[in-house]
Image (cartoon, rainbow, N blue to C red; front, side, top):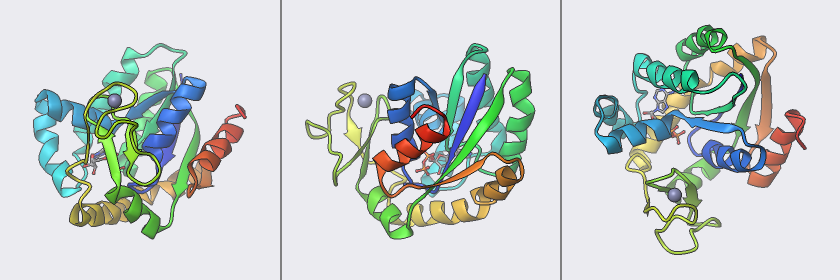
Length: 215
Ligand code: ADP
Ligand code: ZN
């Protein structure tokens, strides 16, 4: 099993890029945010525990996240190819992932940081809409669904995430700078780190594909 990681602030485009690459090269997209939203929708114990943290833009406790990821990895085959989006989100989660990968017969090959200026992040997030059913990401500037509020891919309802409001976004950016940004150094030391200018979606995807030898 092989894995890559997409790092980046909220609104950097991790989810959009991951879904595009999944369609193009068949790499599986593991979004812990999508998994948590699904758990909330299903009313599961994980969902009940995660909800309050997510509404405030705080990180959900590491043990909850690790349980979700472990279950997902163990369900996949040994030749599976994964792209993590929104995980790991702090050094502790990165260490737990390092410990978990050999257990699943896997290895990390690349860690991509998607870099976007802060004003673009705020603009993207306030215009972001997502499919409640499949997690597809839309944007009112440039990437609207063909039919208003209806997902192009699955027909599900397209809505605005409750944590995409200004106060919560600011907190999520602070949490990113404090908790997640140190992962850059962590993966740089392991020689896995690649920085990508992510202002433009297609350029971002092209750059990632080149690094993966799939261009
Ligand atoms: P974004 O990257 O735009 O912030 P996500 O969907 O990745 O959106 O995350 C939304 C929320 O879900 C986060 O603010 C956090 O509360 C929770 N979350 C997602 N992934 C993790 C994780 N790996 N560790 C802790 N909390 C997480
Ligand atoms: Zn959908």
